[in-house]
Length: 358
Image 1 (cartoon, rainbow, N blue to C red):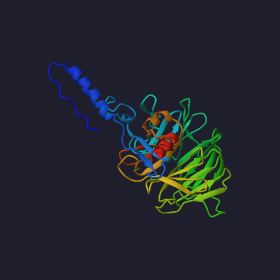
Image 2: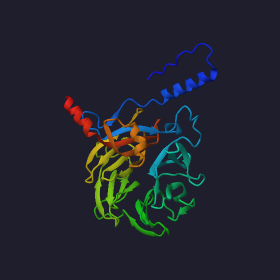
Image 3: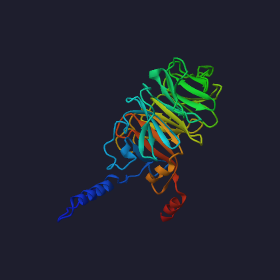
Image 4: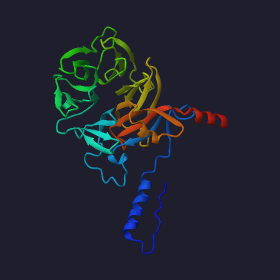
């Protein structure tokens, strides 16, 4: 869209000219993206649409009237991402902080600073406490709902991810290549999973994890380029993937998420795509790929799948596409730090009309 500023003559007051220009330029700057990016591309039926991205406070506020983003209003090199209570939490490693994108208030906030050293991933418990995996402090830092800050008593580990379920906290220990399960109140170590080699599958340099609604555990295995699925007892349920850059293979598997329908989303920082698998470990599709255009990824690290904030992001969707849930992916490089996608389907009425017109 080319914005041409008209020439004003006569004795029009300078203030009025200034206000007009600001309003006109604001409309040009806020012009929505006109190119619709679907995955897979036509002629296949779309299942994922790239919606928008978030890198600074300007991306959720009017770019003209927000002013220059302050030190706490931009994202440098994000790794972990998690969503709760309508807010997006992002670990920004170079700044040693966790930023909070508040879409309602349209502002950036931070968890208390000066405590974290190398924040990697983020999780929440049922009471709303925030847990941050921080290899720099060799443990987990907990920010509770009543503003208490504690170092969760995990002992000397190298945590890279964690998840809370009920009264238990599951922690990925990169150093011992295991999942350690702690009592969420006392910090007592309850169990260690992932070292049973009876079926030839053990954790090897695990990076990220997810837990589905049945309580099954999914771990990305950097050492073997596989995804390991276990139950709460540590019993191996499934393992899939191998080293490679073809669909169903991984080069640097990192972030992982499972949606309400059991679909498994795996970030590959090497191939720079997100692959979607069914419960049998069969690859269904992928999206992303490296690039500088909208919809591409640049050294992706983590992923969050959620139904929260749907109303805010549906305005970016194509009118023909129904967004069922959102997919957030962090990019450690490039101009788009948080890429936002919608997972869904073509609306039946519009699809039927297009078929009738052929």
